[in-house]
Length: 569
Image (cartoon, rainbow, N blue to C red; front, side):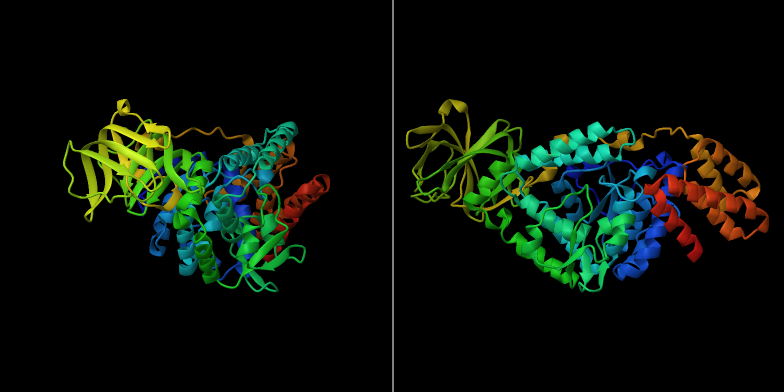
């Protein structure tokens, strides 16, 4: 079945879209979801932002079963949002781009029972139950969407990309049940090595810190009595329920402190920031955007694009845009960039629309163009095959014969020349035998940002045909333990009776003496039925749980919280 999404997915983002294969979720997966959600809902309905409780259900999330992304998509429609399944960690620019288009990207994997409290790898508990509920608040929803628009333009650098890859590897290893301590240690060392190689903080890092300390780990209200709205907290039984304790430092919201404070996704956060309103967040991201290259442009913006070593766009003040991987700049004596160069596929656009015949096929090997004022303005009275010489104040000189041109509002923005020579001092920047030279015209660069000016065209050949991938369904082989979980689920949902309960407990004792979660669910059934004939079995399961808690101290808290919730039900 093909999912119909409320907000259409831009073509350039489709390569990140996955399928939520709902049949892949095992009965144990469903039990993990249910346990975490029962714990979190019970706690957060008292300690979270006011929109959490209603927002949870309004966004299509249920306590008893893992949500379907297509149902969430429909439920989020009244709030101007949609939901789309993705496959795990994706680049930050892409993540923000989804949000800029009003789409909540949801990783559909689920944490394992061994990592029930928290996982550094995005999972559906985090993405769905963490992010979606607060989006039902209009002011917060606007903030997240606006953040996406700004964050998608943030330029990173190559060293930080290596940190992202190392972080993703470590997160995946920490979640995999068969990872060895040596593998995790090696991945931790690799991450520290990559972090040490980062010599400067990019826009992408600054924007990600603001995102982390707000959307992921934000508190709202007063430092004395804050409420939780951050998705990382709302999806974590451990950190979420401990973050309001005095052990965690509460700091009044301050943009400069936040963007100066790094974070570690693999460990609990030692401090949290408390905003007084969601409007304060909107103001902060707008303030941060004013120092970003998409607003400031100029030579420094071009340098940031150069350091990113990734697809970026430079926009002339005329609206002409150059998209590609920037690899070189030529400077004048004052350090101002007077010529830009890209390597590899490049396209030219005007205000976000690719100019006909100036896509990556035309500029497959790169592009170069001067930046600056011409000594003699270029006339709009141009004639094909006429010779032209353009002298720039910087000293760049362009000589050639006109083939065609592109103009807007009576202004020439692009000239195509043959028999063309481009020179600067004693350097030849373009030789006549290289073919047609396309001259971008503009006195200065007004904006530089990550990604493409017209992503639908620029990334068209990278957009995977997703039909086969999305329609594929794999068979899951269920273990005996899965079947036991399923049997208890069927009893709870009224699809079976309690006759088999003793055999289930016996099999659990014989084959899975350390499993605690199913025993919690069994005790829940006993509490609901209040049948005295099960008293012996109930006592036995209780004793077994206390024995597991003594033998496995790391499980004691979750066993006790499960039992406490039964008492309060």
